[in-house]
Length: 171
Image 1 (cartoon, helix red, strand yellow):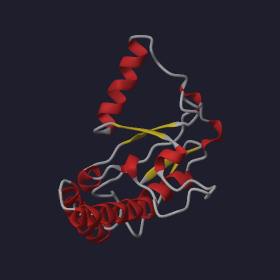
Image 2: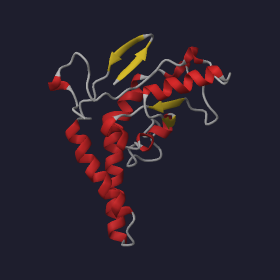
Image 3: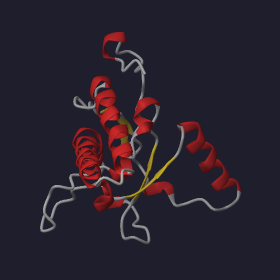
Image 4: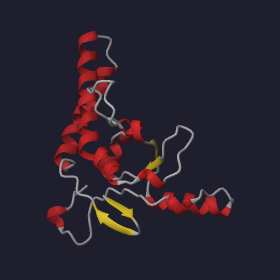
């Protein structure tokens, strides 16, 4: 992941968001979705428990570390009184509902954010190219936002130039 901050991008390692864990949790996620469509209460309960476990893993291994690194203090707040984040997930990372990531086992009295929607309003775009195209059209049609305060971008990359094959995700 790369998050430009103050015009200097930096690499944000996500040591628990490995290809092995992505595929393992992906299988668990698919199974949970299948179980959640059951009419059997026990199977439904198992599906919900698996779903919450995957969302907790996604929160702790990817979403929370990314959001922790973004200084939202200079961002304008939207109608929900939260900043807006556009997720640009690629490869296997695009399989997950990042906007739904969270630790739903925490008590409601917990004051710190425990899920993505506690912090931000999420939307998705398919690629950086699509994001660039949308920004250009905003300018062309006069609907652009004030971008002087927008400085964060998170990108999942299947390969990282300069790291070599051993450190690539091989997506």
